[in-house]
Amino acid sequence: MASRNLSGTLRRGLTFWRRSVQARVVASTVLLSALVVSAVGWFLIQQTRDGLVDAKVDRAVAEAVNDVDDARSRLASIPGTDDDAAAQLQQLADPMISRADSRGVSVVLAGPVGSGRLELDRAGVRHSTGLDLSSVPDALLRHFDSSLDQAWAFTRIHYVDSDGRESLPGVTVGATVQLPADGEYYAIFLLFPMEQEQDTLDLVTRALFTAGGLLLVLVAGLAWVVTRQVVSPIRMARRTAERLAAGHLEERMWVRGHDDLARLATSFNQMASGLQRQIRQLEELSRLQRRFTSDVSHELRTPLTTVRMAGDVLHDARDTFDPATARAAELLQTELDRFEGLLSDLLEISRFDAGAAVLDVDDVNLVDVAHRVVEMSAPVADQRGVTLTVTALSEPVLAEADSRRVERIVRNLVNNAIDHADGRPVEVIVHGDEHASAVAVRDHGVGLAPGEAALVFNRFWRADPARARSSGGTGLGLSISLEDTHLHGGWLQAWGVRGEGSQFRLTLPRRAGLPLRHSPIPLVPTDVERQT
Image 1 (tube, rainbow, N blue to C red):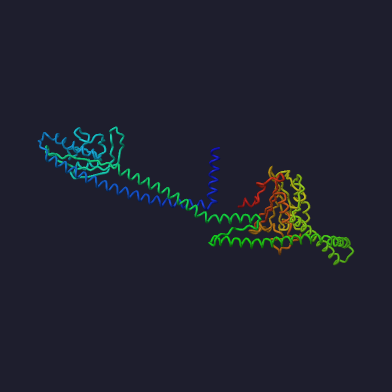
Image 2: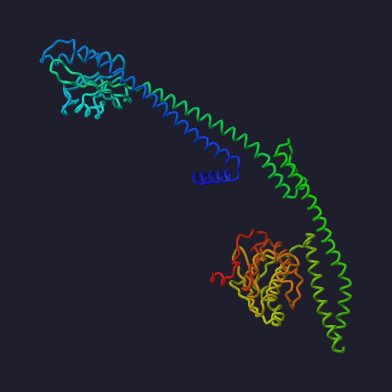
């Protein structure tokens, strides 16, 4: 459950990120500002740290020089002999450690130095109380094994007492003094903690982080406000465009001010007004066209019936006519059949346009429908030299549909395939499953050029208007088939390649009213898929 909630949250977040220009602009601005603030902050912290460290080193070296000079002065005034070296060392160390402790400085006095003899683990080493002798850097110890010159190094000062002090960064300054008693040189190490400098650097760092965070929040707020002023009119334009697309042609944008956004809104409103006028003109033209088609179709019914009756009389008596008159009677009958078919198609189209088409739903076996259509179309196919076959991949293939309309769809598809098969075989494929049923009509004729699969269902459209076809189609059959398919909530799709033929696929839901998710028959023929 937690995983699903997290996945849903991520999807919603990604959707919001993709759809919101304002969020992307704000995020980009904050990210770039964060990079700039980080770079500036790092530079300031480095400069502050270097300044504090350099000042501390200078002060530490100066104090160490003063302490060592004072120690040398006191040694010069202490009388003694060779046997008094330990006493002189003690008299040197105690005052120095006392004064250093009062300043928070630690002292280590060790020796003698030279020839690798400097060690801090000897019993004679004097140092400040609570100091861990490992705080003295090894580099300084090695330095005084071979040199008597003053030197300094950074270190980490460690304490061993119980007053709660932690290790601190510091500067260790080393120098040498000579005891008059034995003439040996001893090393003095003064360890200056950098606690105040560290506190100052921490304070500066916290201040920079706080100021940087507040600055980023301010930048985010400013970016949000600025982008909102730009995005809000765009969102308003999007919502207005969506309402216009939904048919609310009176929607307009609210124009405020005289800036570029206001001019954009004005231009948008002018465009919407122009589109509204044109759409209303087209709607009126379409309404008049539909009414004209319907009126003409109905008005032609009566004279066509009269002409049909006269034509039937002439056709029945053609055997008594001379050859030319008999041929004229046959041509009259053929053209009357075509004219009556065209009139029926126009009446059917007018019913679709008027929304008067209804379904008479029943369980239909598409295999039986395919066989009936093939049987009825066989005479035309024989005239064209086309072989018709039915392939049922499953049987029965049932669908809740209007048998008359489904048969008309399949008949139009088969007749269209015969017209364009160029004498090659036409196959009717039927298949179904528990969710959908499908009929595909495959021919190997002229095929379709790229882009024609989307136009083939348009009214009166033909792939090749100059092509002579014996059936004399009206150009309305596939359009009517598409409308019949939409009434069933199904799909009618076309595939074709020039020179390789075409395939038209009708897919119907197994149960009326259920949405379609797939088709049992692939739109691209299997033989073409194997070739590719």
